Length: 126
Image: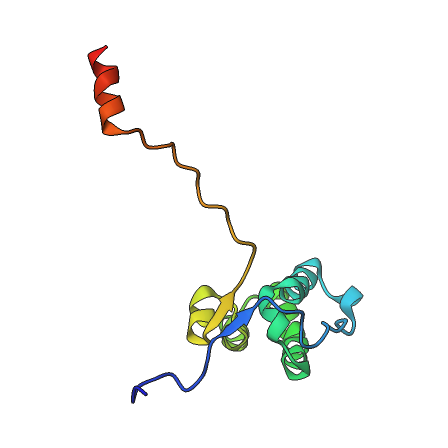
């Protein structure tokens, strides 16, 4: 085994959620922007790996997100970013956390059939 081998395996996110996304307490009282933020997290592939403590963290962030939308401040954004980073918000965050998003396999592009060189030469002679 390598001495510098990663001690943690990667997580592939294609399974049913570990914990169903809870309803955000006071959802209707939040602004449309904060509700969109919650719904984006709720529907994200990362949320399949969330446990109750992850959802609790997001619920605790919701008032900060609301406050940020009302009056943007750098300190609020930094706190939100830090917490979202730990939940795998961006590509770089997911790479650091060794999260792999698994989606439907895309079909490989169809390539034109390759002609035999002899056939190609013959067609040029004609």
